[in-house]
Length: 180
Image (cartoon, rainbow, N blue to C red; front, side):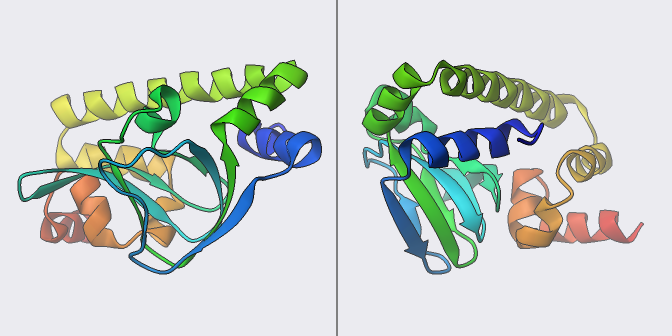
């Protein structure tokens, strides 16, 4: 077993429960749209996904998912309510999906799954707090450098215009920063 908690959780789900379904998405296809209830947790086998919400004409990218990571419309997954977010494939994607009810049964049968899930949620909260702090007090150059350190795979998997939006800068600014 690996020391990577994401891979460990993936392994435990595959070993104990199995996945409810496999999903293939074409580039730009939506996995979830605002207003939909989505009760599935996804594991990304290949491709990349962006999570964003839209306010009037502006899109706000808040997260990315790429191979070897879990993703969900977390607001909907946790509360069973319509999501405020869009999950869109940026590249052709192959995903495994597990319904919340199946996951709940698995957590009951295998406490280590519940522990890992809670650990990963805690890590997600800390990452979101770091991101919020970055957006509020760091310069564009610092934001770029911190994201590059934390998630170098992002720059290989995600088109730069979406990374620029995630960093709250124009694509031109990102390009200048990368060249300097």
